[in-house]
Length: 113
Length: 114
Image (cartoon, rainbow over all chains, first blue to last red):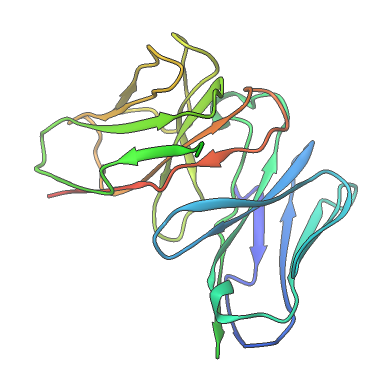
């Protein structure tokens, strides 16, 4: 069961390029998280959003709950943005054995200088 | 500084041995979670705890056990019954179990069993 689909799976960009990562999901959700996982493995939360758009520095996240789709954009990409970006829809109340977050497989981004 | 600590970062064990992974948080969060990450797969939930002295099985709980005797601590034991224990294990916490609330992740423990 692939409830969360991310695209692309891998992305290589030149420094300065505008990046878009897409996330589609098939279940009803109350919010969606975008996470960043660095090569060492640690994960940090970038955004949690339930409607519209959020911006933090060069990162922008958008969501359309009705269309079950979210995007993460990176403007003026930099080599330090190289990481795996993970989309994680939030099921709201604990979804039984799945817990309340389901996770995409991630998009591996590599930004070349 | 508030956060989640996991130790050790790398762990090596022989097949047939139980091993316990540590997870501690000083965020005063009620809910804690253990996830497993395998190459090419999304994170999968092993166990979660909504409050002290309570925990629930996740999707892949077989071969694992947990305890939650203190709010700050949620150790995970990988038992010899876990058929494929080599993986990256992540602990997380959130202020409460229902949400949506942001989850904060630890740095992870990479377990290799040979």
